[in-house]
Amino acid sequence: NPAQDFSPAWSPDGRHVAFTSWRDGNQDIFLMDLDSAYDERAINVSNSPQRHEDQPAFAPNGRHLAFHGRSDGLDLIYALPLEAYRPDGPAFSVGQGRHPSWSPDGSSLVYAHGDGRQSYIIASSVESWNVAPQAFAGQGLVDDLSWSGTILPRGLESRLNLKSTAEEPLF
Image 1 (cartoon, rainbow, N blue to C red):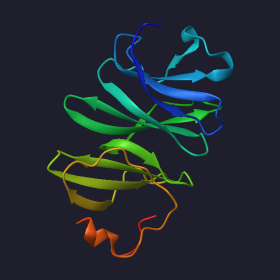
Image 2 (cartoon, rainbow, N blue to C red):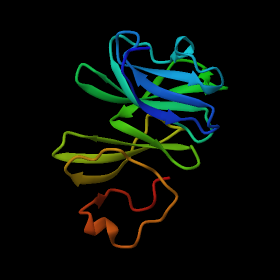
Image 3 (cartoon, rainbow, N blue to C red):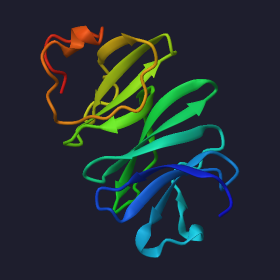
């Protein structure tokens, strides 16, 4: 397809890729099975002319695909349930932000929210999408989050000028 494709995300099984494309005339999220990788077989999984989607991210177990959607100037994170890498219900809003990243166990999402002067890193539990505690606040723009199981060195929070709003780990 001659349309621009970008922001690829590999599935945990390594046999599927989600990507952003303009191939239907709008910026949508597509899913392609690499065992039958023909352009015409790419599935538009967001298919929403009222918003532009980007930044797909597979849950580690492959059961959800998170992505960023922008509509009327509002940045939202959506999660699409998947069954065998096919949509299994409608995408639902998780919270306000961009750049979703899954926890290593797939039970939570982290994403960025802010305006470039102040940024917030938000964490949400998969079981309670409507509860989104603020994890950190910081100066400037935060993008391209990655959640790993690595424990940060003691004192890093103060050196990065981050202010934790939680007494205990969130998830």
